[in-house]
Image (cartoon, rainbow, N blue to C red; front, side, top):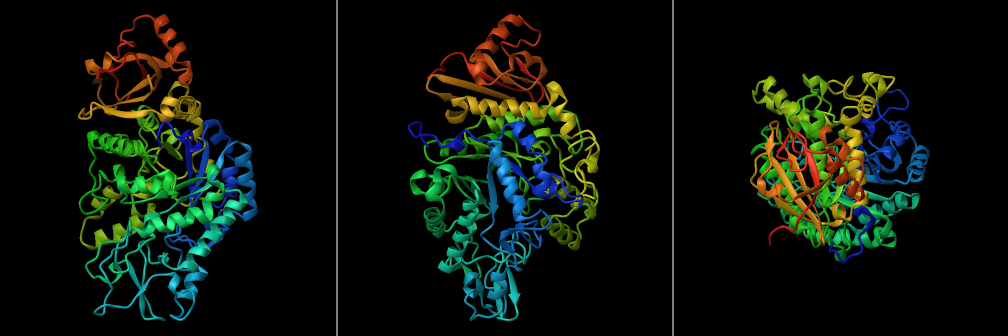
Length: 588
């Protein structure tokens, strides 16, 4: 997207992701539901977000927490009814927000009627709606591995064939080469949009096109990002999105996507998607053998990775900005150093990372609980976990002789369940989420790290700081659309960058370490009035959004000199973040 392009509405928007089973329980069965979400819409409205994204709430056997759909057009009873969904949708719209549904169309549940028909006979009309192959030399047709461990092929006795499942065996992959199957998908999507839904986040949508030759090549590893995916998405756009494109948000989750791929997927002239979720920055700390090989990515790698995407999509396409979601550990425990349940630098880390993320160019995504600084779960036994990926990994590693304590340490840091613990709404722990027994345990220190206490924390409220960040994006054209330039790319503590639009510029400084960070002299010379800061020493200077910068400058002058040298910012405190107007044009 160029500066001459009329900006789409979602360039101003901030998206909030709800993981429904863990957000709020409205009927006391221990599982979050639509009624619970309705009861806390004021929280989202107060936060100032524009779009609510719901992880899957369709009917499902829950083999993968709803990402195995058995009926695309009904609500799973654990979450409520279709009438309750309509009520929720209306109440979200009444508050000026939009609703984006999670859509899983790479695969279905093996209990979906389509698959039940498909597996019954090779002559069934729906057989070709899935991907089947005969054995080769008495074994699987190729060596593809499931994302959750083990072969990506499962045997179907009635047809004497293997079916493909890139995830759990209960999640057979759909055959997008079949036009009738695509028609059924598009019809279903249109029904949701007719109902008033405002868009889709599409799960692993880059997986939908498979290379037919690779499917029978025993050595093949080619199963994502095939060229046909563009054909399918352009057809989807024409059949589903085009008539109401201006009002929708369409996002594709794409593991393995490159910048060049993302440009093709999100270039407005190609009519595919609005933006993609890329994984480069969240794969930086992935070990050579597994995501559970724990090591921390250096700050330099993280900021340079995101800067590459800023530069790569500067003229065409658009970035989705995220550090956490339902598939990732809690950001402040992963990219910061805050252990489960700790208060040491928790507020500082949560607000510093949020500043860095929200001041990049793109659409920011807030994952539920990040706005109160939730940490990793702090689980101590395998019985605490529910995630299929985590449980499979534990069984496989212990089965190979790896000590259980070693495996527990690894999953304690990286398991997806770290992000799936229930939201503690008050200091009453589990009872603030449900009247029953929660489907998964509460995170460590839920009696201290909860919504009510955080919102009452004044200058140390993560929630209140997020509100100011969102207001800044809404009010500042520089933050929404300004060009991005990474500064000090090799600095091991400082995340610094510049945003500019015409002659108007901001400089963002974030100390991503537990130690004080001197600001390089060359940067100090460029710093003008303070726009936003996360620490109390700057509180008088950070009252309003970006259009109040002038008042902030007057406050600086009125305050007089301080021991910490507010005007010149000689040293940033641990996990301190500041946003400044640039006082002079940088040297060319």
